[in-house]
Length: 195
Image 1 (cartoon, helix red, strand yellow):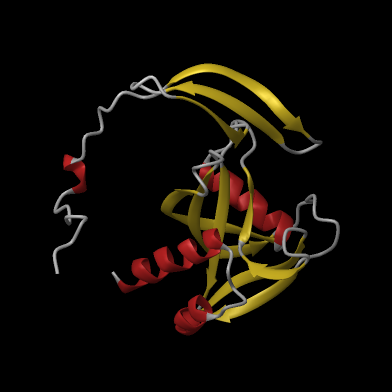
Image 2: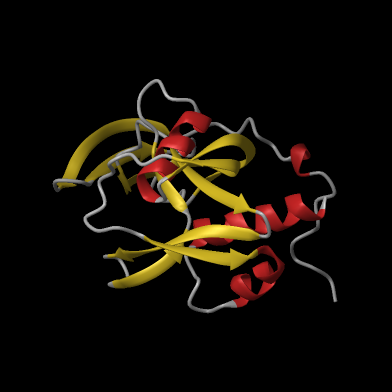
């Protein structure tokens, strides 16, 4: 069987110099207290005109923290309105202006877990749903904890869940654990620990 899509041995050989569409206009299509949807009018190099919609690009990146305490991952269970249920995940939040990734990660842990950390390891940066948004999230591992509580914006205390590192594969396979950024973080952590 002949593949219609040849395998690229080196993705860097792709033509990255393709002419970008010209942005003709950006207007607000809808706005709420939290979200702004923009209509972006584009003209492509072949003359085609299109209007795309997107969330207003983020002005700040976010962090996600994977705290490791001995042989356990420290996770949180919190209510999320998107799925209308309590979900298991990692500490995360927006970076404040002037903060480094490590400072943001440490603040989020103190707000959500009541712990600070002395050691951080950067894993990777992700950006989800590029078709409609631009919102970078930096994923870090945290170790070497000390008690420290900061007031956060959560409406109720978050439930701390200890999850054995030895069961990462089971968590990845769990159909109830489906948030894409959490899964990417777990895959990156698994690869980091196996290196």
